[in-house]
Length: 271
Length: 88
Image 1 (cartoon, each protein chain N blue to C red):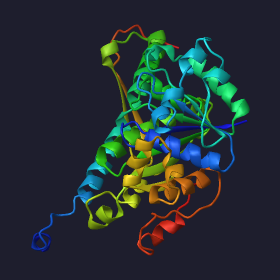
Image 2: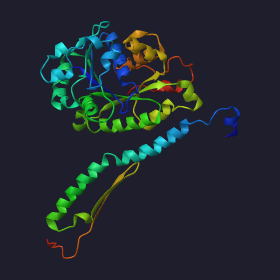
Image 3: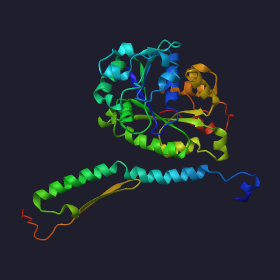
Image 4: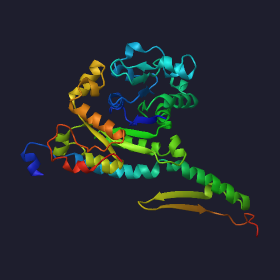
C-alpha cells in the first residue's frame, strides 16, 4: 500500500507546487512509483510545473464523476517513467470535488503507487481539507516570514484535528519544509532563522530549500528543479529531503553554505 | 543602537518577528478550535442541568483558559430561587 503525503501551507505562494513536483521527481529518481495529485480545482498549476500542460485530457473531477477511468486521467512523465500526474480540473467548480470521490480515488491510487503526493490549494477551505483528509504524512511548507509561519501554525492545528488519521485517534506525522531561505539574510538578523521557525512551530525539519534563481528557471522550463539541474543548491536540498521522507537519516544542511555556520543543524533530523 | 547606524544598516528585524509570532500564536492556539468545544460543552451542560432544575440559558457561563501545562474549565451557573429544584 502506498503512502499518502499532503504538501500544505495555508498561505499561498510559498512553494507547495514547486515542492510537490521536486519531491515527486526525487522519489521517482529512486525508482519508486509516484503520483502527484493536484487538488487546486479551478487554479491547477502542477501540470505546468511538470511541463505536462498540453497533455491533460481527463482530470480528477472526471474520474470522480465517472466520466473517465483513473488510468485515462493519469499522465506519465516523459522523463521519469515512474512519475505520474493526476491533474485538477480547470473548469469545474470546487463543489465537484466530493469527500466520497476523493476517498475512492485515493484508495485506488494507494493500490498501485508507492507514493501519493497531494498538492494542496492555499487556504483552509474544502480543497485544502480534502487534500489533507487521507494523508499519512504531512509536509508543511513554510517561508521564514511572519504571515507564512502563522498560517503554518494554523495548518498544523487542522492536521491534528480534521484529518481521518486524527479522527481515528492516531498521531499525524508532520514535517517542516522551510523554503526560500536566505542564510546570509538570516545571519544578518533580517530573516527568521531556521531555529526560530522550528522553535515556534515545533515540528521536525524535513529540509531547508535555499532561495535560488534555479527554482524560477525550472518552472520556466516546466521541469521539476530536481531534474532540471540536479546539482543546483535547491535540487540538492530537495533530493536530501526526499531521502529523509523515504526514511533515510540525512543530516540537514543548507547547500552552498560555509561549513560550520550550520554545524548545529547537523543534529536535527526528520523524526 | 548607534553601532547599527554606524554601519549604515538598520537594526535586525528578525528578533521582532520572532517575538511578535510567539505572542500571537500563544494567543491563537488557545482561542482557536476551542470556541467549538466551549459551545458544545455549554449546550450539554445546560441540557443536563435543565433535567433537574430550571435555568436561564443566559445565566450559564462556560469559560476555558489554557495555560502552558494545564487548562481550566470554569462553569458558572446561576440557579434562581424557587426554580423547582427537587429534593432527591
